[in-house]
Image (cartoon, rainbow, N blue to C red; front, top):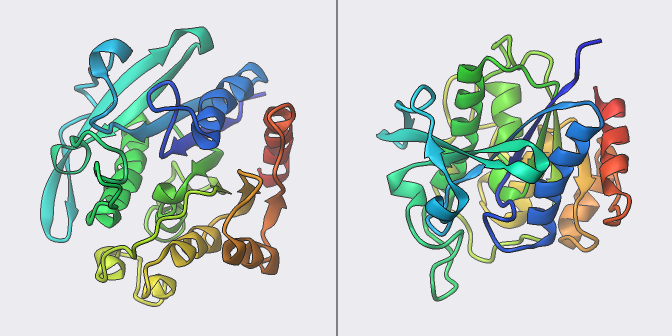
Length: 267
């Protein structure tokens, strides 16, 4: 029987970023699921604070070189990779000089959120999916971690749905306590319009705040996981009011087996 394939997309993974509930899950879950007989691929952004020399990142030339057009501007897509030897797993990094060279993650040194976080989310989501197409690797499940991945479900259901690689893919969206305070750019919804995506499809983010970005991710996902014990109350109520397949918060002792079993319900 062919192994089921799980694609992990996370806005943070340890040891490349400091430990948090999300970064620890995104590090240990793929390893645990791989050890339980699944095939995995894992992606995160190559933020400027990720130490390339210490973590032995190197560019994958055959996957790099594409340009992604965002807001009528070309942005080169660079793909790098590193290995976590103890886990026998690789992590792919989405890189771009305009979006991911700065030495911080989503906020500057003063704690102010970057004004282009909306475009960074677009570039990251599309960059991952275009790279998976180049890898010719068809995931059965795409598991997204964090609000920066919230566009992936939309793209899978509305833009890439005709691509045979994604025609059978199910999307799982994990919601965390990663709220941002300032609204994203007012034109965010317009930047998402492309073949297959209409203004009605992204109407929920006409007001592009954290709650609405989360709703967008939930709306186009097949299943939802509560990644941290406490999440935004409005988002939690929205999940409960939806008919989505749902897995409640799991402790660090149980989540790998619980998530792995949950995937069987989603396939």
